[in-house]
Length: 106
Image (spheres, helix red, strand yellow):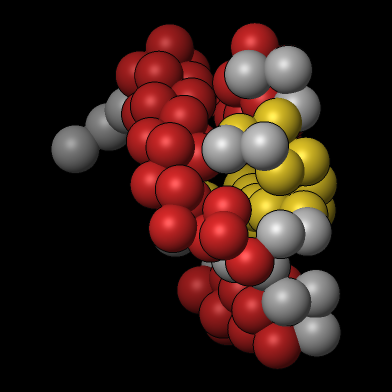
């Protein structure tokens, strides 16, 4: 199945917005909601990854950078369209950056 850029952006933005609304339970803990966004930022698919990042930034901006009274922080990572790089990037986002939500196509 092949995604067009428009479908990819809709999916990414929709997922980011849904994830942002799903953090209501975290609001009781206070602090910042960290969202890790994983996309292809290098190589032949970099244009689609950049579009996805802009879509995620737009979704956060439309919410005013706040969800359930907590500031949203977006942390970007690249998958390079390679499974091993995607796993390492996801692991870094979760273990080192301590993201609450991880969004990505791979």
